[in-house]
Image 1: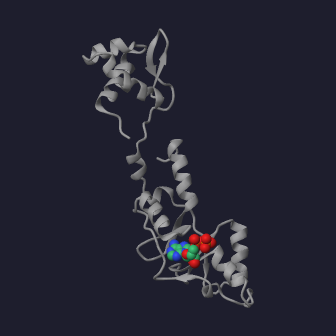
Image 2: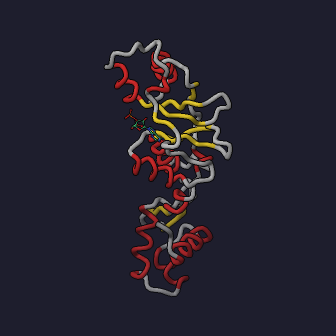
Length: 206
Ligand code: ADP
């Protein structure tokens, strides 16, 4: 949601003349008091303006940066991505499970000797292996992983919103962020998406 031109005008009038009554704001705009009633209530609900009975409107002390959905949609992956956990393909399934617990993640990315993306392994992939007959200390993680080219990836320049869509459309928890050489440089997970919403609302994303 974006502020209308009139709402922006009202904010500017209040900034200059606070405290100011709704009648005086209306006079300055050359409209009736009734015509700006909805605008004033929108600005008050958004906590941009505050109204004191018998005093008038003044600009709220809260952070005035108005955040719109467009700002949220314009956030790009490089602003929100977090460190990815990577392992080599010959790591045993047992050690992969240990690593998942130690670093507290649900998805681990498998890379080759040059850190290029090779596979991805989720909690369920590992659980599936653990109900089979394999010796988990001897079986390499490459037998449990989803491999390239079937991995859904992101680049740092993509929109945050696209990351959310890819997670949603492909029903996965996490996406590796890769550079032009296919090296894993970070990840965006469902948790990252939720953190982005909360941090955005709290003004933490620059
Ligand atoms: P879990 O299976 O633990 O719920 P996911 O939903 O992320 O975790 O994984 C579901 C399946 O998708 C797994 O087989 C996993 O290997 C695969 N997978 C996970 N992330 C990706 C990805 N980014 N691209 C392609 N496949 C993935």
